[in-house]
Image 1 (cartoon, helix red, strand yellow):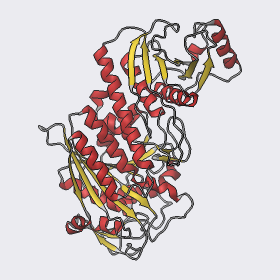
Image 2 (cartoon, rainbow, N blue to C red; image 1 turned 90 degrees about the horizontal axis):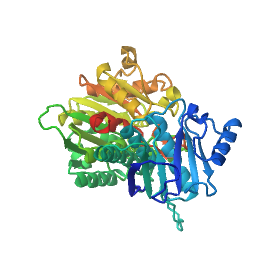
Image 3 (cartoon, helix red, strand yellow; image 1 turned 120 degrees about the vertical axis):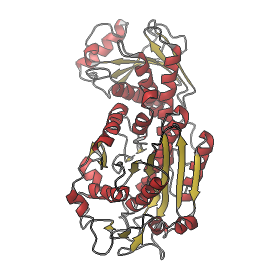
Image 4 (tube, rainbow, N blue to C red; image 1 turned 45 degrees about the vertical axis):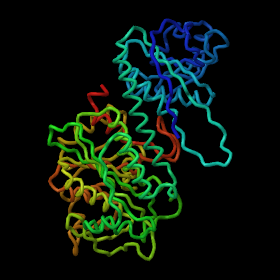
Length: 502
């Protein structure tokens, strides 16, 4: 589980010989052109070692490269960590450099790191990117071994700037970056919880804790209230489990003078067997991550609670466990939803879209006039985008533009998929208002799954984010760790808190 770096400070940089904080190592970030310059480390022996690595192609300055050079007493640090920034320093490359530096520090079991901001880069933006990367890089999955060894922790970081900056402005940038990274790591922690440690009721309890901590209004409906209100889809999906469903709603009012309310809906399937349409056993353990959309929204609320943006939000999390039993719903069932529409169930493993549809309808009933849903919805998105990008579908191209820009600012990849009438036609049912799957999910499966949810959004501006390929990784990739990634927390934070993060 993630540990917050307890001490992140800034000071004006004088030279590499100045280590008043007693840091174990210093991070120096270099572009490809800077790497070819003379004397970048200020010590001939270290510069020669770096040049030999460059000549051999061992360190070329591309983003993602990081090497630890022992100083042998030439500098008041045990190591100089040299990170590549590619052709130019950007928020993305600085964030990545800090992630890899944090991982290297943990591997070396060092506790204190100094980080030199690159020359000519905006101080506030650089401090923000490095802080965010450091905290993301310290993340590790919780272990449950009987005799778990004590893990090394990165406890102190000092950001070195070339010139004095507005201390309050710099401190606010660091604090905002901390909030974003901690929200992401919080979402990772929730998503990585085993299915026997997180069921719908305990997900609701976690939401209650978060609400109490930040003062959000919260409502949790149990299975009896869910049924009484006519949420037949949520009851059906959760009906096969001994752990009954919950409908979780949190509200944040940051702009009481505005009538605009953003509805955020997150898929909270705490474990997904596929139900009667059971999944193959190989890899099913990943299905602890099927509540990744819910975790993303709770992570985003963690950021909102700290930064307090001027927006109004209602966050709806339909939570269920999709199991198979004598009470599970079946292929061929007709389910009546909260909206009054009927759904023909062709595949019980297409359950996420059903409970999200209930969440969309409930968010609208709570006053939402714009909607974004986040879900580990389909395996089909992997066919289209692999585990590289999150897929997006919308009914309003103008509505999605700021979100796509927020994703770019946050360094997360989102790709908009088409919404053509022919795709919506593929969901027509002979016996119900809509069916929950097409005859072949291999044909536009990610698009039609999203458009099922969009059917219930109706005319309300709506965006669907399919994180089925990006919320969970079987091995670390780039700055993302193995297991849960907390994807879309940073994007939603940038979208909701733009003025507070720039």
